[in-house]
Length: 268
Image (cartoon, rainbow, N blue to C red; front, top):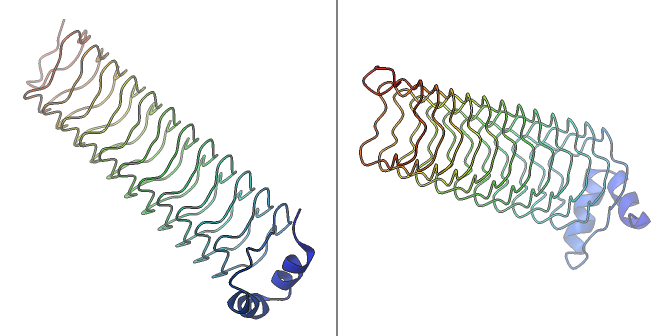
């Protein structure tokens, strides 16, 4: 439970909280399980604060400093975290559904099992983050930086991944069913056994990507760069490869039934 003194200092206002934190840098505040629902916490300093299981539904946290904070199992439903600093924060099992995280910094954050369904993460920096098992269904990740992040078994169904940076990220066994991945950067990305059925990957960069045993049935791969990609055992049934670059790609054991080939011909 939250430390009553710490909570009282926060409730006393931004000036009181800032002054106390500056005078007591050695104290790690404990606000765990506190009810801060709908509070105006714009620009607040929560660096390293224990906010586990805290109620922050609809809270205003624009440009707040939450770096290194413990937000495990916190409720941030519809919270406004625009340009917030959440680097190295622990957000495991947190509820961030419908939250606004545009241009937020989530680099090196722990988001294992977090719910980010329908969250707006446009332009966010999520590089080197741990996103194993996170739920991004219907989320907006357009122009976001997820380079070298771990997204194993992550749910990205219907997500907007247009022009996203996923270079060298691990999306093995992730689900990207009907995701919008146009123009995305997936150089050396691991998509082993990923579900990309009906995904829109036109003009994406999949150079040297690992797509071994991936499901790409009915996916739009028109004008996609698949140069030197590993497609061993992948399912491309009914996929559109019109204009795609397959030079040097490994196509052993690939299911090309009813696939539209790079020259626009249809495979039997």
